Image (cartoon, rainbow, N blue to C red; front, side, top):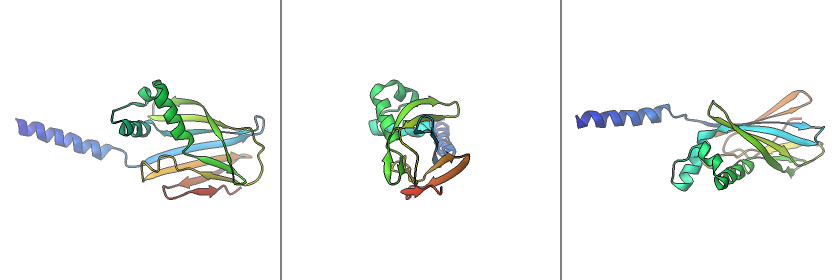
Length: 166
C-alpha cells in the first residue's frame, strides 16, 4: 500500500513539472497622448511569476492577492515593475508612475502607467529587462502606437536597448 501512495505522489509531482509553463512573457503597450502631453501604457505579466519571485525572496508562499494586500510587498512589487523598463526620448530617460493595476481571470496582472509631462519629439528607444534576472528564458515585447501605426520590439534576456523604427 505505501508503495502505491509513493508512486502516486511521484507521478503527481512529475505531472506538475510537466504542465508548468516553460516560458515567461511580459507585454507592454503604450502610446503618446498629445492632449495630456505624456506617454501612457499598460503592462501585462503572469501574476504567478511575480508571486513566485516574492515567495522565493521571503521563503514563504505568497499569492498575488496576498502581495497586493500587504503595503510593503505591494510597494516592492511596484518598484520591481517600474525598474523593469525604461523609455528613452533622444537618449534621455522618461520617468513613469504606476497609476493602477488589475488582476485578470486569465492569471495575468495588468499595470497601468503614465509618464512625466513631456513633449513628443525625436528618437524613441526602449529597454525592457523585466524579470530577465529571475527567468533566463523571459521574453518581453513592447508595442508603441503613434499616428495609427504600430511599432513592435521584442526582447530576450541578452537584449538591452532597442530603437523604435519611427
